[in-house]
Structures are given as C-alpha cells and as structure tokens.
Length: 116
Image 1 (cartoon, rainbow, N blue to C red):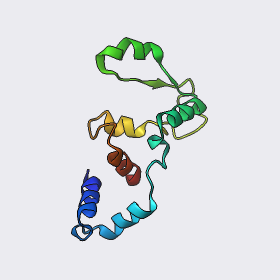
Image 2 (image 1 turned 180 degrees about the horizontal axis):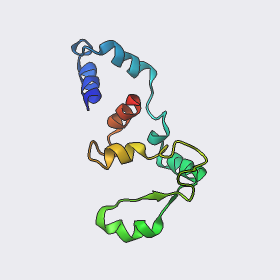
Image 3 (image 1 turned 90 degrees about the vertical axis):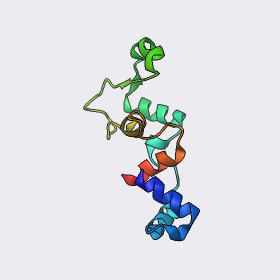
C-alpha cells in the first residue's frame, strides 16, 4: 500500500515524494504485465496448462454460488515441471483474496509486481 501511495504522490506532484528518483525509475523502466501473475487471463491459462495445473471443476461448481472462489490443483504438486509453483496466481492468493486490493486494480497489481 505504501508504494501505491508514493506513486500517487509522485504522479500528483513529482517533488512531493521523497522517493521521487526511485519512483521515476520504476515508472520509466518497469512496464506493467511483465510477470506471469499479471498476464491476461488467456496467458495465465496457458501457463497453468504448461505447468500441469488444471482448474478443479468439481470444487468450482460446488462452491460457485457460495463465494465465486476457484481453486487450482496440480497432479504435479510439489514436483511441478515449471517452478515456482505459484507462478501465475500468487498476486491473487496473497493480495486479492486477502482483501488488500481488488482484482480490477491495475495499479495495485503493478505495485505488487514491483515489490518482489
């Protein structure tokens, strides 16, 4: 959240943030969507398929009306052919599902990409 606040300060008035040089660097050199966790839904689906992760339709259908939560299970869990194991869904799991920001907040996704 702090990075988002500093980016907002920088965009409002660049001299208002004590981190202006760093934020300018991030803004100018780090485009959005470079990490798999910020790819399009189609890109994420392709990576899940490559990684051997499939959506658990039985679980999804049983819980569809309860909380719209979809879980992904892998037959290769613990020995996935393409580490890291949470390559695609870590922003959703660690930030969105915990209520840190909403799935449609592009700036927050980008800030999460930048902090790793």
